Image (cartoon, rainbow, N blue to C red; front, side, top):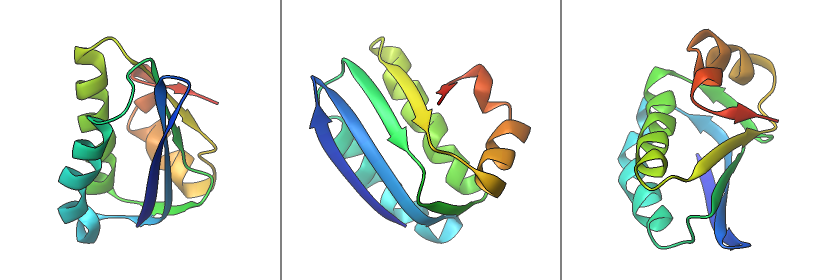
Amino acid sequence: MQYSIREVGGGAEITIKGRLTFAEANQFPKVLAKLDEVGKAHMDILLGGLEFIDSTGMSLFVHIYDAANAVGTKVVIKGAAGSVREALDRAAFQTLFEFQ
């Protein structure tokens, strides 16, 4: 998993590429800590470069949702396609996030 986080318009833009799996779970606390340092107006998660996600990988999004929901931040998932989008749809993530 490669990721970057940047502040955009008082909110955050998170780009995640590669594979998001159990093997990368040790990076999740770093991602969440960095998100605490940026604006909370909105949060966009860009997944156009994400090739694969497993259930552990999806748990990162649940943590992001919980943190954002606690402070009233809207989270939008952008660019999810193929098997990644199918996995997120099967897990009913459309009930938590807006997809674009």
